[in-house]
Image 1 (spheres, helix red, strand yellow):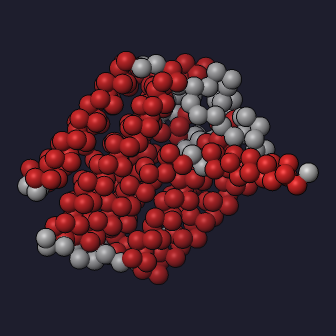
Image 2 (tube, one colour):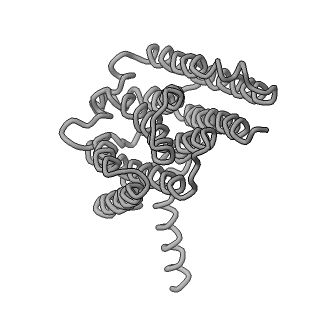
Image 3 (cartoon, one colour):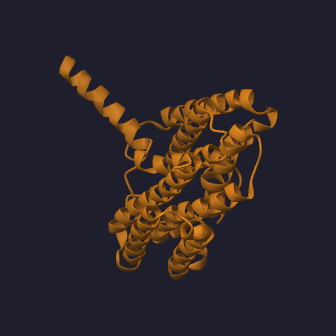
Length: 302
């Protein structure tokens, strides 16, 4: 009996861990990493607000994943023919009530750490509006993900806002460089959503989930994916050209990885695109990590 209880407990822990979708977490911490590197470059890096920013990003991402799991189930978007990773509520691993509770708990933790950031900046950093937008992505009377605005949400909350505000809480200022790099990183993060919606085109269409791919077609999705990559690399091109040889080498590897990932989008179908989804998320993290290495290197005066 004791062994069975331990197995059940482990299964429950595993279900919550899978519902948190750990493979998506690098996309949430990547902009914070870049914002911290920019602050270090300007000689204003502060470890405490940096850690708080990481915690806000991490718990907001988990809350968003829990909310998607719950509200997609409620709206009928998680059908038996789902091609993406299995969802905890749809599979019956976690009850809808427990998932909703988990959403509010993790969202509350994100808000708590966000409020602590006020000690390092000012009251305008209250992130309640951001938290509401995270939930609105799949919930509310006008859910963004169901009305073709998911891409805008990703650009803002996985690019512009986390990079610029991570930089702000440490430097108490905004910069054009942080904004341009936040857009570049945000566009690459949008591609994660593009692959997800490209894969789920038929299922989303049946569920009346009006993603940009449903609205404009799969061919548009492929063009959109390439365009986002091109703009991101163009925005950082001046930095790359003046960078040390080893940064050029790393970006060369990253460019090759992006090329092969794009090729996958053109040739793979169905569940095979889950691999492309993972590769796209990997490229986002490597993009942020390589830029961060560059700014830390320059900021250290090496």
